[in-house]
Image (cartoon, rainbow, N blue to C red; front, top):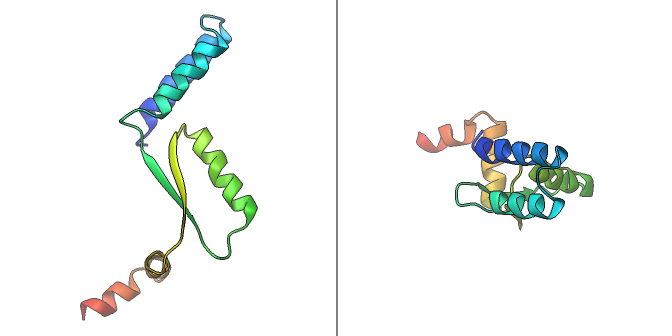
Length: 99
């Protein structure tokens, strides 16, 4: 996992907070710094037309679970839809283009 270093750091901080070695305020500040660090990934969330509100909430929950501090919600483009269709067709669209 690309974000494993941040996840491990947050786990260590959480344990320190549980052991009362750091305050809630310090914990929150340090977690924020970790999530917004230079080495953490930026995630682009794009919902397909058939996505539900629950799907979006689930994606946002995953951002919290995976300690992703930088993400954006964007509209899905026709190019994105084409890439998804190609993936669904196991690369069939790109094989046709190559001929």
